[in-house]
Image 1 (cartoon, rainbow, N blue to C red):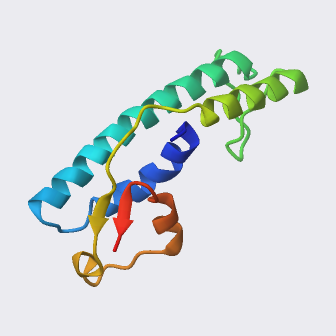
Image 2: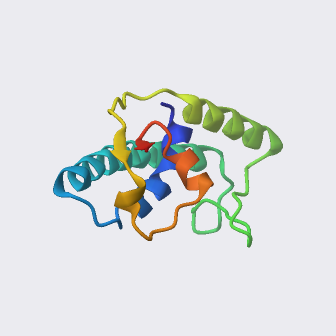
Length: 128
């Protein structure tokens, strides 16, 4: 699994933690969530390093950010290099090997789940 997969899975995993499940299933989801959060935090730290390296600076020395939240880069070349390195980072494989957690429709009860969320949890949750 690569870091982009992890970044896409974390919000869905956080949402799944709201389900009321048996102890064993809740524990398995907790462990998966904790493992994914650790890898996600590493990904965010590495992204921050890239921003620090390639972003333009404000008067205070902080990375410059546009009103819409987009990073302002030092130059077009800096932006291209950032995109290249960020893509490489996102595609980097990490060592997350978990056995998919089986969840049945009964365990979801009246809770709603979207197909998008199911896609984000593919390989983590085995929807029965």
